[in-house]
Length: 393
Image 1 (spheres, rainbow, N blue to C red):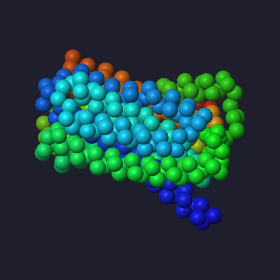
Image 2: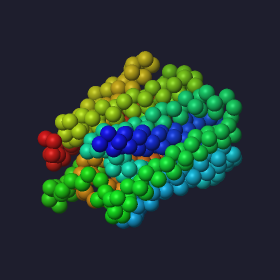
Image 3: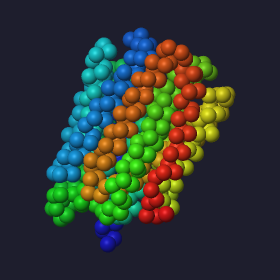
Image 4: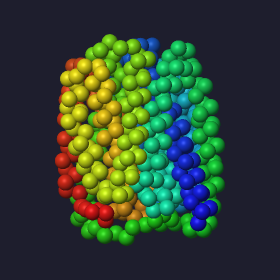
């Protein structure tokens, strides 16, 4: 039993590390937006289009990858996905036009589309029953990785220019090696548990009617729309907002973004554990609706309070994601890869659409008006009232 526990912990750490490295590289893309905008004279709409391509390529393939892996698991697909990310990073370093930048971020997005559903399945397999905590450990790797992207850009890329992004390929190679090790472990598990899994993990028996499942999925869709539209606005445009409203430097804005993303990582761990203990419906409800007062205040405060409120919103709102994902996979046991891929894909897709819309709005009106209008989105958390109770309630 002791050995089993050690193996589970090591797998969760490796899954989280792979997620960290992948998302750190992915987060370089929005972190260099100010540099790209200045170098190529891009509009906010073009910046939004870059995000749209990144997140659509990340999102559209994920349910397909998840569905295929549910039917026939591919232990080494994580390593293949990271090869796409590596190619995207190298292309981005030497892209000299808007079109080539779109190609580069599309490659990087394809890497994420493979990683998320498969790694989420491995995390659930290694959860030992604490599915919310395991999902949070997996996701927190991504959040920590995203938080380091702006710091790396501020310290290493901005002083040296676009081509210095190529040095980040070292992290992609490390992620490939970690993914290969995970592939070995997953392959060994499949020899024991059989090849038809998602039934490989700790399954829940279906306990909701088809009507309840449909209602729950509609509610979750609305909640994801609310969370991802608002969260993407902060992640991609907080730097521009701080520069525009308070006149801070690009480097200083990256440190503020770092603080926001770190707070999001902390919120993930808290939300996952609370969901395991007290019920995921309460966590989902409280995390999205609970962020509303802070979001509504944020556009009307000074620099210090803007940063404090952004950090608070990041911590509160991010606690919902692991709870939403585990809630959904528990509703439809046996389809962990497909559901994980669909929800991660939905998250990225909604974020990409939101980023393009908000970029257009910033061009037409102002970035400050965008922050004022999007502050009302967390109020949609009210619809969580209609989620069916989960088994912990």
